[in-house]
Image (cartoon, rainbow, N blue to C red; front, side):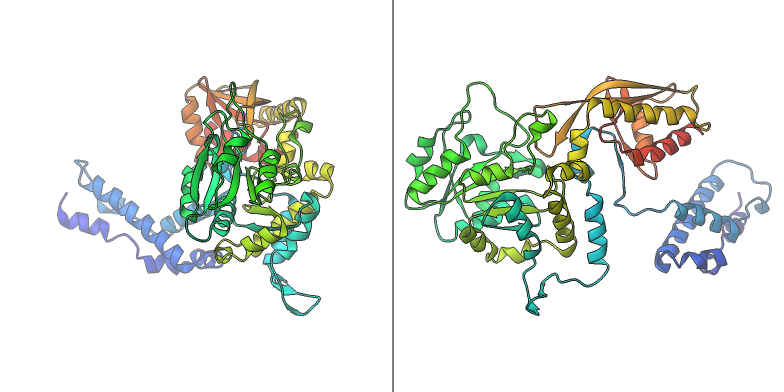
Length: 480
């Protein structure tokens, strides 16, 4: 095509400014920043212009430039369609994986009481660090300390922004000064998610690592034989994400606490995903609760707030008052402190634990773990019946069935234990299981399932009834 004809066609594109002045676009400014709208228009014009240039450079015969007529209305419609589907980068997803505490999917769902308290506190001013009785500056941790002391039966407690920070702060506080040593079993030098390794965190905190025992067997006398004038702490670490079985032995926290008392050396136990409710009541294997660990006599216990506890991201530090005060006065305390929204959520979640039955009912993490097979299957049947009633889902192309499957707790807890569950199996005549997974992930509300034996599954343990409409909309979209 002649260059003058090409230029004539390209000149037909409207200007960004003319589109911005459209009434419909101007109304968008009530919901979106003007600069964001402008960038979206520029992207649309650039994309369309690039496609036209590619077409004009091809061998296609163009009878007249009038065939290309890009009006303002054309771009306004495309802009409105684009922004009607707008969502932030961080978005809600449907968890069909069956992993209750899924680190990649945000871990624990917060209970309604926590969400209400977050809104209440963050939408106004609060007494975050103000003592209402005395009319002067207060301490932010007082808002949760009373609950932690009551629930854990400990002398004092505080919270930082995650359990890694809790461990790091504690080690740093106990190991101020040169050549301060921390004794830990070789079988507990673990690595958890995100390449978080106990030896690395100890090194970064300034602690000198002293390994005792063997990978599979550590005895109380191994700790005693390693104690010297530089020993600052005896450390026990929960074996998250793995289990050792067979010819193994490890002393309890109580065993190590007795050694610490004998030699006047503090003892700390990192629980990782600490629970405040005995999991055996849900038919799961026994795991010590944080209360039980405090009761063994260890001086400091650390655990996560957003795993089995079912709260926001936080690291709990609890134990002897003198040691907790020492950790709280660490200069790192300000760097690792939690904000008002986390405090608001954590206080509401901890409040639920004043009544265990209430906690299991109201805290989603506990509720999802506690679901029976019968309850999960009932939920699967309910979703399947809804699918059958929706007319805009192509039933001839899909094959739906309910299958037995297994879920896991996640968050490093009970890595060798599977929970019986039921899943909705979705098959399509023309789309593979991996293809379905890709389509579901691309939905406005992404749906994350799992693939087993070339079947695409939605584990109904972690699919909420509030997610049903998102799943139905996705299936209707595929049917188009």
